[in-house]
Length: 61
Image 1 (cartoon, one colour):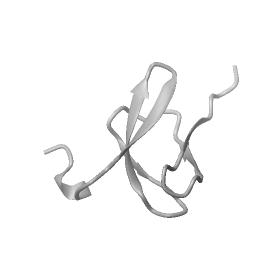
Image 2: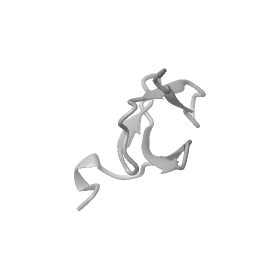
Image 3: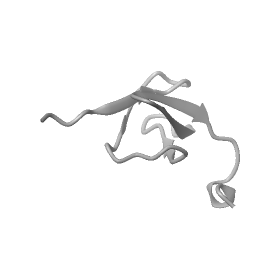
């Protein structure tokens, strides 16, 4: 069984963002090219990125 490679596209610079196969809904990731931060939203087999605005330290409290 082949591993599924989860990827998303940065909305700012268009770079491909590779996500770990165990990524969870609501996890924060960032673009390796421009550094824009996103909240990962899993919708079935689909991955969407929601722009993160704020401090990582405040997230989830």
